[in-house]
Image (cartoon, rainbow over all chains, first blue to last red; front, side, top):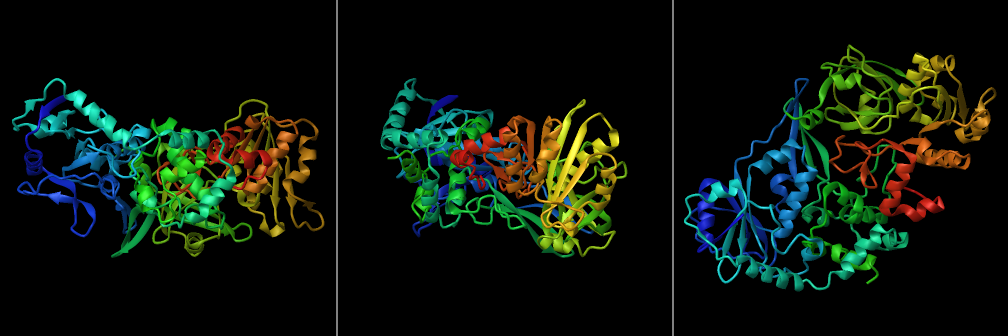
Length: 334
Length: 285
């Protein structure tokens, strides 16, 4: 890992965009913030703001719809993705943690891995906390964790750049970068502590996780939360680690195309079988499942960390007001 | 392509023949065009995904293992859109196949006493196991209790006729006429536990039946690690990714559908169902 002074983030961005398609979150002029393509000659200033984009980078690797195979003249033909190299610029620590989580989950999924290998990840420490984020409580921010990105932008009085990987080094070759002063880590740590402190006391959230795993949450709590879930799939769509999908067959000329499409474990029919048997028949069952998937110790053992990265998106999007922060506090008795 | 990609891409198979075998159930024989080593290595209790182009994909268990010609059979009940269309197919038509997936029944060695408890179509996932014991005469003492709603609802008629000459097979009906045993499989546990308790119990059927059978076995002194259940869920991908078939923090397509009862209970306990488990009020997790 090498740290450099970065006189111009825009110059770095232009340099990277010259080699491969580059995306960064940008306002759409209508109050939205989306991942958009930035050309090498784009002069717009890099102004990431405090709030993360409503959608994480998940869809770059695990698209909302994706063809898996075709059936033609009695044969099944694999559809392999052929992604062009691309750069994600300005990824926050929470979303990078989520990518690392999905890297493990989809470790043997060729479609995911093909897109992942095509990506250069440029992370960014958060200079201050976003509204509602609690990444510090879950060890996924506000500073980018080691090894999660090829390059990391560090905000401060002036920008600094960490070069973490060989791919990152290759991507910045040709740029005139001067080493950062030796005490660069001290300033970074101060920013991290300050942003983490802005997120408030983590104890009530951690108490919720502890209660959940200790079996101290009575069934009535889930049954009370259940009716507040409208089954809209907002949380599962914006969650950077949610990965459930369903098969979808689409007719083509003389055959069909099988796609996999995002699904949601909060839909009533998610586990419903042809017989009518439903493994999770009540909204409370499904809400319980959702939060166990995010905070259950069994999943943590398998994937090395909890499935929630504290990005706060579910709290922002849930029309029933039962996002992670609210639910954890409720489970913990706060 | 890597192994996972291979297991996600269906292989063509043909419908060879079928015959009615129980109420709204048929016995199908299929033939794989491209046979792989893992087909012959199928363990009874595992399942495959059947792709019916245009109708989707659904999991079914094997009644017999693919032979060296790629032929195998499955017992399928008419239940939804896919099976409705499957029942209309003529021999020779091309379908898709993926598998085998999941964990099968455990292997038993030596002179162990095994009890298989099946309800309704739940006999199908046990068929390969029963067939192996009936054929090999390995010294395993296997008793089978099979419960169905009524005479016409019983499945696997040819297999049952064959097994009844080779091992103790108790058939019982919810609605029994003269000459038939009455009641659920549990009503006959006194008979099968009479001489000596089994060393292992394999259950497959509705979850209510499996849970009741497992509890009855515990009440009769068996340990939870002597009991196995085949837990059906909505498997889609077969490789533990799509999320539909979760049982606690496991996926039935990968870690099941065969679960040892102590591990199954632990999964549910870990997933917040402890109180329902303790009170015997378990619905699902």
